[in-house]
Length: 182
Image 1 (cartoon, rainbow, N blue to C red):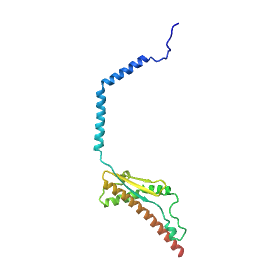
Image 2 (image 1 turned 180 degrees about the horizontal axis):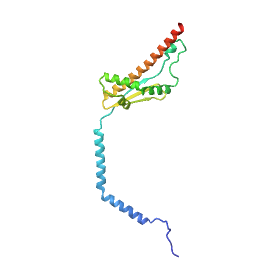
Image 3 (image 1 turned 60 degrees about the vertical axis):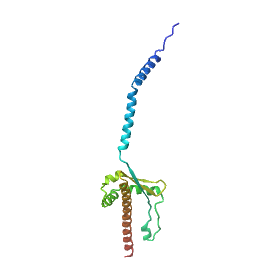
Image 4 (image 1 turned 135 degrees about the vertical axis):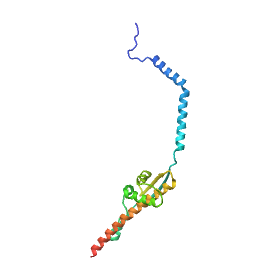
């Protein structure tokens, strides 16, 4: 009785021989592999040392609202939004308004900092802290003083925008009161 090899049985001897040839070629070229590793390390070192330092400045503010109009009209006073996540998410969106950025650009230019609204948009990151009414305004720059100035200017522009909105609401409420008594 003769034994026949299965038609699809792998030939381990040819697979092993091919692997051995590959290993021998790699071992013969060890210096090339080591050179590539050394070049990669040197390139990474040069890239990391020639890249300008990045500085970050962060300002944190608490956002909330007091319904001044209700106080003015002697109605039930509502203090803030009952959902802090909703209030902070709204504040984050307000930071992204073009008029807030434009106000910050004007303030920075008055301080001698030459920036554009697009630069501020790319340099600033506004995040809401979960379960709080606090938002963080972080700015990045290669100049630490500029990072601080941008963060502060955006915060001040945001506060000024909120004050303007509250002032307009109060003026409207004042008109309503006058109309009631006229």
